[in-house]
Image (tube, rainbow, N blue to C red):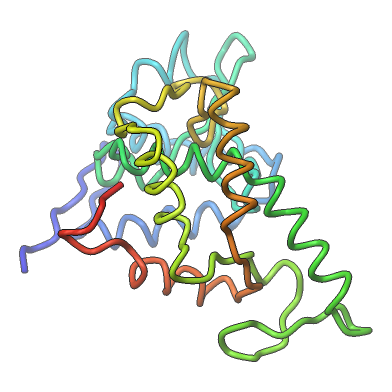
Length: 236
């Protein structure tokens, strides 16, 4: 196993990328959505931002200050406020790794974005039927009773989300490169499918084949890698 590369910024250095992630995650969690980042923390963020693979596009006419914003997935991220008042998000993890998302990741995120409101509605419908008086409901995997905010609607194998996207594209003879995406827009946390008809077709297909369970967030993330398609099968 190779050694983790150090991260050297103008303001400080980290022995490993993991150390840098811990530092900036801790910084992010010190703020609430909408809060302005302190001048002291902004020095480190500005130095980190220089590592972004789309630095010039992110900075634009210049950085006025930084804020913290809430994403549509309920997580937080840093946001640049430019001197002209415009703004855009950026990922500290992207800056640390200096690696842009793969085409596979972008396409998967775009299809997930297309059905996000369907998943929210499915979650709310499930909770309205199964939640107890305290608002808790059992995780489908662990049995632990959890709150609405502690869980996600997870795709039950074998029709995991990756399999659903893969079979949808395969049925149309499409490759990853054929999926039209909107990218690099300000405050676009995830790419979107540019073709509305394709988005709508996927929503219909997803509704027809997806079987969803309410699963604790940490379990959901842990299962994701285990259910990825293996080499030799149709790959996304």
